[in-house]
Length: 532
Image (cartoon, rainbow, N blue to C red; front, side):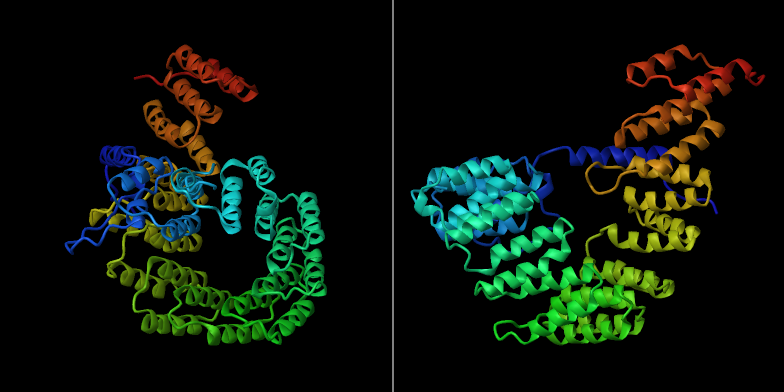
């Protein structure tokens, strides 16, 4: 069927508008998308900081202005802000505040660092050991291990306790430094600074993250031998380690031990971990039993828990249980969010229940939720995998008719589907649409293999001006390469165009001729341009 997508010019215009909007103020990433006529709430420190979410925003001047306006800054409020910024992975901004309290990257680390540093410089408050520990961990996140070690070494001796030693251990574990981590925890043991499960859990995580699953159970035994009671996380890591080795008997023994510990209340999350291990081992009945136990432990308003259960039941192929839980969530949670829809849609698509998925899509479209292209993308991927590309394209066309331009990722999914079916004319048109609305750093990049196959098609079938346009679009999303120039060379040869300027451009872009280039150029001498 013929696509009714926007004209190429209109899509380019749309792409330009989007890029202009996204390249403006550094505060754009944190700006609100909703309007409200209700009376503005009382100003708080949190309400000032939360919108300043973009990593490039320096919080220190904003905090200074806040104090200059006469607003009170309480320690407990600053500590709450840092805790929440860490949850949001805005480490740098959190550290900025903490450094400013007196004593004491990646782009999300910005917030935490800034808040902590501001605290250190502006408030005459003595740091407790927990403050030092948080500060040290933030330094490790933002500035790296050497800076964290330097901070630790420069601390007063009476500030070097279990919390600060533990924070440095966490830095070593995060970097997956096995020898340093083991040496450090041994020193902690010698100093009598290992009284909680946390350091042992760190070492178990270290072994897990370095693929040494067989070493995890011995850490749990070491913990118990030293009189430290394991917590839920300790047992869950150990259960995972047995699952990673497909040791079902070992996993069941640890689970039974966990269930009989007086200090432990086995939560729904643990039972879903167990269920997932059973599913991978094809123990269907045992997996179903574990999921029933998980549901019994679940807080009835825990949407995340329902999502986990629905996803696992989809792996079991149990559509009726998925639908039962969906209806139960609807009653208990009152509202479905986009994450809920993507989970349920993903499960239905996995089971090939296309009609039910389409009905659910209609429900989402009328839900009033924010337009998030990750939701329809789930169904688009399902269409692609099932070869229902006309349905996928029709879905995109419907959105266009409603005045909603699909995201680059949505166009890219369908373009990939057509390329996989060797329908390169369709793949080219839809990839072109994807590139027209492409925005960097939003989670989608063109598939190099698909792009290469499209370029090969264009080299044999298109005019040079069309290829030039396509390459200009591509250059926004990926660096220019030899394949792009080879495509252009082929079209120039076919059209009998002068090659010297093109070859100079290729050289200027740092791309040297190779054997394939010379083969294409050699064909020029044998090529006879078409007569007009």
